[in-house]
Image 1 (cartoon, rainbow, N blue to C red):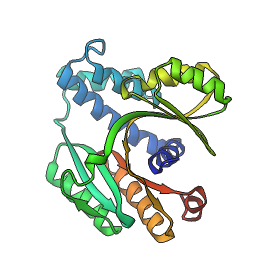
Image 2: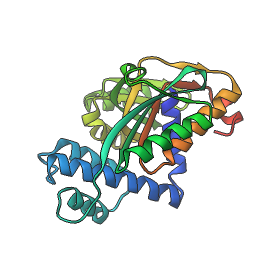
Image 3: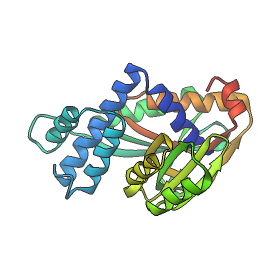
Image 4: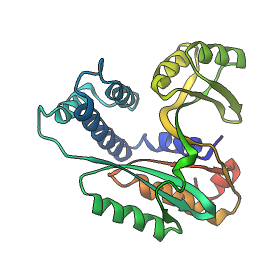
Length: 248
């Protein structure tokens, strides 16, 4: 399983905590505001908003909270003025980082991201230095079911690929249909660990040094703990054994 997929699993487990859940909701609310502001408040004609609403519901965000965020974005109530920025960087071992943020203060967020990286052995990169290797994909992690059941449900729903590993199944699709594929897999009896529209790297860096692995996970945690950071994508591959050894 790729490094970011492992990180998605870690985030899913962490999300059970109320504090972590509240932080996730705040970040999704920003996404809803921006999507509604840029494309309108009607999800039937705003594909971006429709996708974020499905993400919000998958995270168990209430309908009232979703509606309030959409209204703020549509100008029907007071809301923030967020700017979308993507930062690029490196973690120890040459691991690539793609950091997506929504911020109302570019200078503050830039300083926060730079500090989080430098304190833990990472560094900022020039625009385009690592971004070229990432493409947006729908990624679903699931467990249960036999190969025939999973393949049939996934491919009939429009998925592109199904890969088995020691943790279960990794299904990839066009990002616009990731939640439809998730629903099809659930209907087929699979347990969904996570489903998201994410950035997937074409280059994987295997991390075998425990100190590097520890620093990478700390960088991921520090960045995602920042309210302005929407998501952090990376290309590390850390074995389950090493992940457990360093406290992942």
